[in-house]
Image: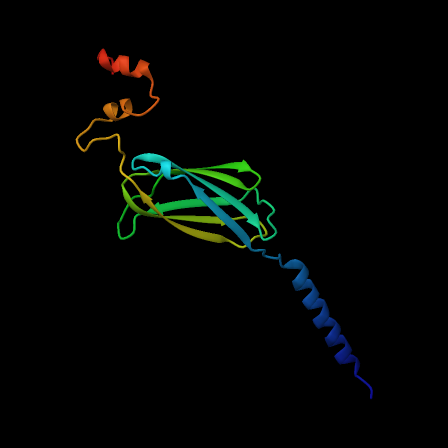
Length: 162
């Protein structure tokens, strides 16, 4: 049985097309995100420190990723929360986020790195009230009650310079 040249040409064209798509299309690799947050930093009106560790599926660190954090309280309309992301190297990222109110917060982390699938991680945390601030209290008095706070600041406050 003889195969016509048209079919050989069509088969070669299909093979070249499949190979070119496979070579030109970048492979998207899944990533893994680990989040650590210390409970001591979850206090209202203070900066929370959050550590992220971004790796591939084999555990190799992913550097130079775009990390976008956002936070909101469920069922509340709020202004965007200020945050700062600092890459620490070896797939480690530190996020400083200012949580303004006590209660339950939903913190969302979105990561994007070249060659990796975008990743979204949602973390629910409970933010406590500042134990050093009274309900009517002043900020200066709350600072004085904190352990290890500067005596120089206290003496300046005593003499009315602040």
